[in-house]
Length: 359
Image 1 (tube, rainbow, N blue to C red):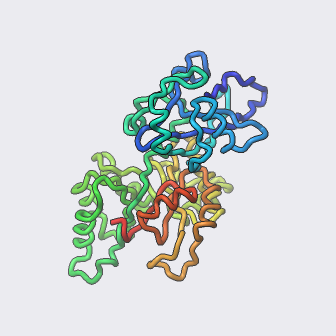
Image 2: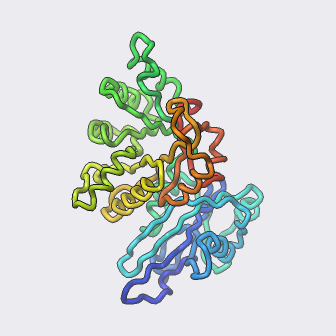
Image 3: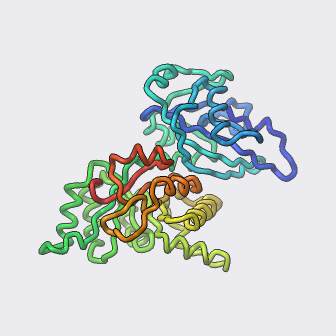
């Protein structure tokens, strides 16, 4: 188990590189418990430990999990969730966080673990209780919990133009999404027409089960009252253009306050290495300012889309290479279907999103 308290503090506060394993089987997650004598003691934590100088993060992950729990994850799919830097004041840690889902036989073999191989207490906990904050984790782990809110699939609303042949397109837009969006789905509502403002509010009122993502640039403040009214706005989406404007301007001392001050997590749109680098910078800035984190990036287009058939897609191989650069979970977008969730996971993604086939 990670024990940064045993690492000697130096005058320049050497950064401790740590591999973190978010191990689960379906909705059951494995946590360790830190002894009171340890740094950040009397808290639960994800399994993990220091990355040695002669090993990669994944090698450290496999080694630490085996040493602490006896679980062999060598043949499991290991997908990066993200990277985090946290300053505890007396110690600085850089966490490389990975998602590992156990197979049914692995879970059956280890489901009754109560203590690890190093004598530490272990517990399998339900995801809903974990995300609700029932288990007290070190401060550096809080962003991980935000990442874990992301579902395997995110639906995107149809544009108003999709209903342009109807007598009342706005009413048809509302009726369609009210009836067709799955129960408790995450829905990114791409609103580009002011006529839809009231319909968006109506949709959230009529379907309070929907977990809504709204564009930050136009609706983060328009719907402030909706936030107070308790609608399930789980994140704001920042466009690629807005992201790059923030990144380009930050060197000149201008930081878009709206971009950084939203009281909800962000999901950022990226298309290339430059925008992913900008998203990483924004993520670090938000954590430094103790603002809600970036919980994911829409990385697109993976495949050819009907709406932009002339845009050259990344393809799975290039998409996967770009996903490795991100310091937060990656969501596949562009020409995908819900059935491709597992394929995206194999290529390093946590989720897939789209319009057609998702609603």
